[in-house]
Image 1 (cartoon, helix red, strand yellow):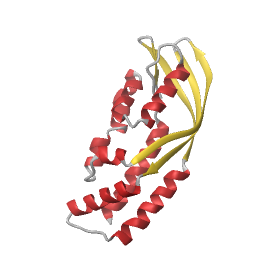
Image 2: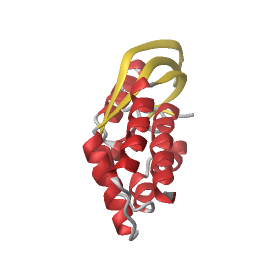
Image 3: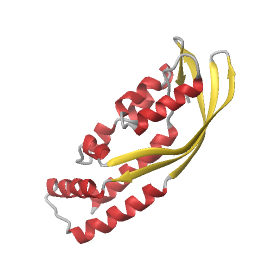
Length: 175
C-alpha cells in the first residue's frame, strides 16, 4: 500500500505542478506564448516545457518536470503514466494584464482536467506492486483508481498571473 500512496501523491503533484509553471517561445505576443505552453502540457510533451522558461528559471522548471526521475524512483514508467492520462484545459481565458518593454503579465484562468484511463492505470499499479513482490487484489485497486479518477475529472481551477520576460526576442515565463 505504501507504493499506492506514492502513486497518488505523484499524480497530485503532477496536477499541481502544471498549474504552477508557465512558459513560452513566441516572439510577438506574450498571450500566444502562454497558450502555446498550455498546449504543450495538454499534449503531454513534458520535455518541451523547459523551452518556455526564462534562463534564470530553466533549471528549476527542468527539475519540477523531471517525471522520469520522480516516477522512475517510484517504480513507474513515466511514459506509461502520461499515456494513461488525458490532460485538458477547459474554458481557458487569457488576458494581458500588462506589457512594458521586456516584461509582461498574462492572466490565465481555466479548469485543468485530467481523465484517467482506468484500465491502463490499473495495469500500472499491478506492475508496480508486482515489481515490489506484492500483489493487490482488484477489489482493492479499483476503488483507489475510481477515487483518483473522480478527483482529477472534477478538475482544478487555474487562476494565475504568469510573469513573462523577453529574452533573445522571445517571450518566456519567468516566475
